[in-house]
Length: 310
Image (cartoon, rainbow, N blue to C red):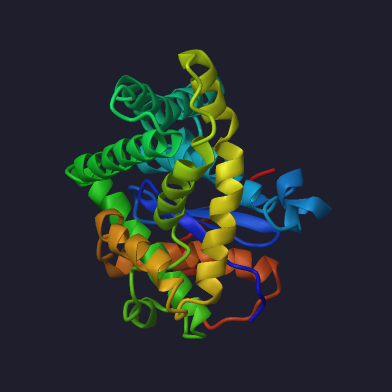
């Protein structure tokens, strides 16, 4: 087993998996078939030499969330709502796709970074210490994050996405354990994983408390700018922490970092059905094959369609 960490994310009625050289999105179409899109990973954030350096490699995680993951999500929405093959790829592209990406990014930054900073600024009459003010901001940010996860989890559509999230974790856990990639085998594994994106976001929220502490400007504008500019720095630090905790999951001190993320995944994962596990396996198999990894897999691939993306 190499030290490369395979992983992915849930999308609408499917799963995206990322390997060393290729990403694949598998989605269950309304017809029942599994449609797969494969994309070569050619961006500099994956291929450049600096992309493997400590801290800089955290930029790939940020790119995965903001670009690769969003594209996979939009493509999965296309497949999930298309009634037949002729309609696939038509609903979410061009201005619609980029407009959706811009709105989602703006909403996320405003809700989880700017709003907590603004509310903490209003409370600074009671907190004259920068670290205390940053802690208050962090608590507000964490509360908004937990409330957001709980609220979206009330939706039946989101609960299905969370079930696919569980399928993604089970599949990765099975692969890392060397188990056969079959729905029956994968189903026995945990739906929690130490390298989950939910855990990564938790690390981001915790790291932001310390990183933002020296930047409590009196000017609200300067404070907002500092929050946006420092997001990549926070992501780079958080990524190294999650790699460290994943490499030493039984270390007594690191367990304090791991356990809260695993507990939080109870909100963002659900137990998947066997057909969801089929989709997750179908997403992982092509990226493993592209990397020359041998595995034992059993899927109804004859009913699957494959789309190659540039």
